[in-house]
Image (tube, rainbow, N blue to C red; front, top):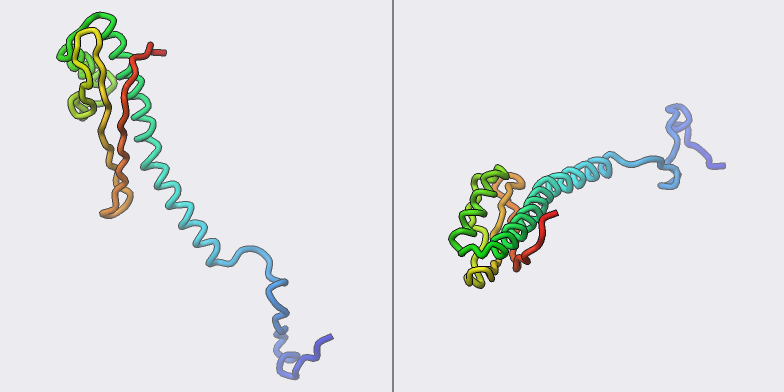
Amino acid sequence: MQRLSRVQRLSGVQPLSGLSTQRGASVTSVVLFIIVLGIAVKLMIAIVPAQVGDYQLTKTLGAQLKEANDKGETAKQFVERVDRQLSINADYDTRAEEVFSFTDKKTGQLAIYKKYEKTNNLFGNVDIVNRFEGDIEAVVAD
């Protein structure tokens, strides 16, 4: 057993026996965990909606492209069709010309390439920019 000095005995203060007696998390680790968790949640809030929106837009464009090619529509008719669909989907700030370009404008063989970006504010003057691009395949809507 360790000998205590007279001052330690009178004050009731026990000497530290090392880190092995510490239980639980320190205040610093709890604060750091909360900060990291907050940043992760903020990132998810900024990124996930853009990814879901891109998935929905890709499916919409694919279905509209398939229908336009089956009906033998021109590129202009296809753009009007997509603009109508975007307004139905309540995506009022998106115009068809801003989202895709034609790689083939032949009637009945339309092909498009999607390229656009979505910017979300993370905090202050820090933004997250999601860039989306790729060929759109004509698919049947589910």
